[in-house]
Image (tube, rainbow, N blue to C red):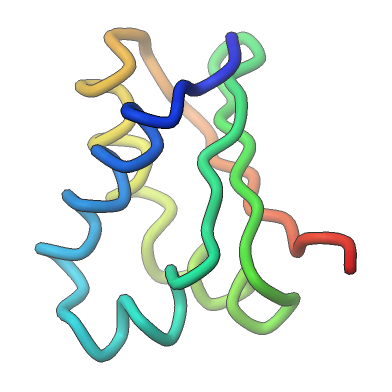
Length: 84
């Protein structure tokens, strides 16, 4: 299932409430919540450092928020750096 732009923005907005403005701008500035395959959500971050920090600190938060917004169970979040 491809995540729509509205769903992408909704997940990002909820994450902004959790992480705060400064951290959101640093980590989630160019994030794309892209697609669900089974129970895995694929997320594309700005770079490798942002992807690693997001996965370490916020994967659980993202899975809970995405499960509610997408109305399907997300058990795993895979955060990858965007290809330049």
